[in-house]
Every structure is written in structure tokens, then in C-alpha cells.
Length: 60
Ligand SMILES: Cc1cc2nc3c(=O)[nH]c(=O)nc-3n(C[C@H](O)[C@H](O)[C@H](O)COP(=O)(O)OP(=O)(O)OC[C@H]3O[C@@H](n4cnc5c(N)ncnc54)[C@H](O)[C@@H]3O)c2cc1C
Image 1: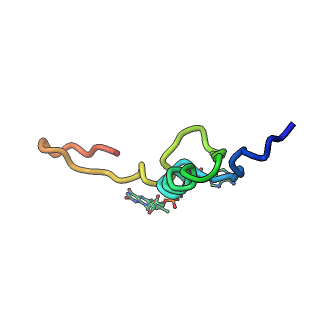
Image 2: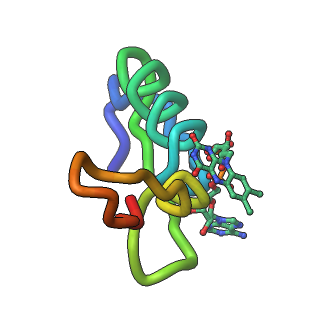
């Protein structure tokens, strides 16, 4: 039975920067359930490659 005191619930999608930021901000006022369709977080932000000091290419 509802007491009427529960926070409204919302859904957020994605566990990359937008989804995580939205979740962080929304959870201050709402109960948030976040959905991620991939089998890992961070969306596309993992694709940057860098060259280390020894010249090797390292994928972030
Ligand atoms: C090919 C490519 C390479 C990039 N490489 C870099 C990089 O190296 N470094 C960098 O700083 N920025 C990079 N960017 C830019 C970076 O991806 C974006 O600025 C940033 O990731 C956008 O974050 P986002 O949370 O909005 O979206 P995204 O990172 O795209 O994340 C969206 C998330 O939502 C999930 N999702 C999507 N649809 C659903 C659904 N229906 N249900 C549940 N979950 C869902 C996805 O699986 C994903 O986890 C790249 C962008 C692209 C397209």
C-alpha cells in the first residue's frame, strides 16, 4: 500500500557521461532506475588512443 511519501520514480538511460550525470542529478529528488544496453559502461569514451612515453600506442 502506498503511503504517498515515496519519491517519484524516473528512468535514465545509458551509463556513459550523460546517463551517469543525469542519474546523479535526478537522484537528489527522484528514485532513479538506470538502464544500460551494453555489457560495459562508458559508451564511446573508451575509444581514444594515446602514445605513451616509450612511443607505444595504448587504447584508453
Ligand atoms: C566513434 C566515437 C568515438 C569517440 N571517441 C571518443 C574518445 O576517444 N574520447 C572522448 O572523450 N570522446 C569520444 N567520443 C565522444 C564521446 O563518445 C561523447 O562525447 C560522449 O561519450 C557522449 O556521452 P553520452 O553519455 O551522451 O553518450 P554515449 O557515450 O554514446 O553513451 C550512451 C550510452 O547509452 C547506452 N544506450 C544507448 N541506447 C540505449 C538504450 N536504448 N537502452 C539502454 N542503454 C542505451 C549505450 O550503450 C551507452 O553506454 C567519441 C564518439 C564517437 C561516436
